[in-house]
Length: 391
Image (cartoon, rainbow, N blue to C red; front, top):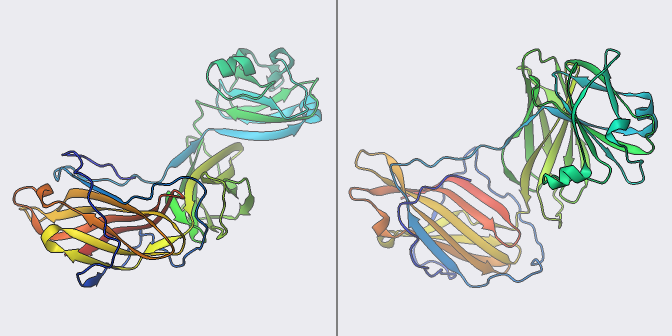
């Protein structure tokens, strides 16, 4: 989401025309390489719930001396990993590769497993038992505001800890346990970043995986695509010539009714050190799209956008007006939003940029940029055009 710098309060609500515009339609600019434009439409029933049906429109002035910036997709950085083990493995000793001292080791019993006390857990390195600088049980973690299942224990390793293969042991362990190792001081970091923060169902995506840090070894990774409903499937990770790895995959076209983000979970080894990371992104069903044209009332800087809706819902358009400054450069001067309920079929959303938002000396030519179409009922970003129109 881009950063917006406001110079004036929003104008009063403006009407939205849902009829065909009276001005000649013109095509939107061709989509750019970073734009998101639906190539198909999905027919879905209207979501359950009470949704606003009245149309609304508003705009506010921007300070043209302040640039608008796009926030890049989230970069996940990991100094941690997880293991799932059986009680008999903990009885014999589970190997935990370490790259730095003072790691945190969290042991959480699954349903039916024996809860363990901190003094029943021991950690050794090269045959020497390591000191435990601090421990906390589930009750202490909850008091600190952390979500912890019953029987969870967290140990902070102290004296003697460091790089090497530590052994975690619990002679009384029975059942299944999840072990989480976090090394806050580790030089070995796994990075994962999706190529965008939101996508449409059925589209290709890719996540770049890389490792950094002093002494980082060869990177080997696998991945799992996980939907908000808990469904998952493996994703192939391939190496690139520059030492990174890329997970390229196609998003499913099926609709998922469970709200939430999709995740790509990455499981890697950086040399001998395990690292797990997850990066999240929104996936929307393409329930509507811009029809590919616009009509302009130049005297009022009023842009009418025809919309093709395959599914009933409340749809919103938003865009930024750039005007030509006295020095000839294009600067952002106004932001406008418009939303209305639409049944399946054709409709129109109108972006009204008040002329009083134009600073002295600013004028044509104008550009409509960062044009978005959103499905407000399903919380999906359907279309995004960095440069949509010039007039």
